[in-house]
Image (cartoon, rainbow, N blue to C red):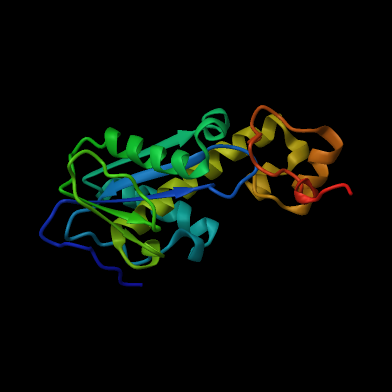
Length: 199
């Protein structure tokens, strides 16, 4: 799929996050600056790529990028500031770690806080439209998946190597049987019945 850049004349960073809807694990954000002549033919929204395709693309993105960074924000902080602020915080910290300062920021989604004095634009489904965001989505997704796979070795009962912390039936069954861990987001509704009232 051929994706565009928002502003071809500017040094543009794309940023995106992964893991926002999970019950466990961090929210992970990446920021990527790609060169104008970037040649990543398979680059697309990470959700539209297979696990194998994402892993194939990751080293190519890292090799071609002018700069990239990936940051985790962990459950304790998510619980303190809420998931939206944690997602934006993760994106800001990824931008902080770029070795090259961007002239413009393209953000996936519709919510973002201004970053320093650098202009930005929010793009709904931007990871399917713009190359820098798509590249950031692949890095955020693969690095977070790697982290959850490592956690799964310590907590195999939650099936994190498969569900990555998302609220699958098996994950919730394990929560009922074994309870939550330090890696679960305590501010999240871990069970659907938490919304119900006992009358």
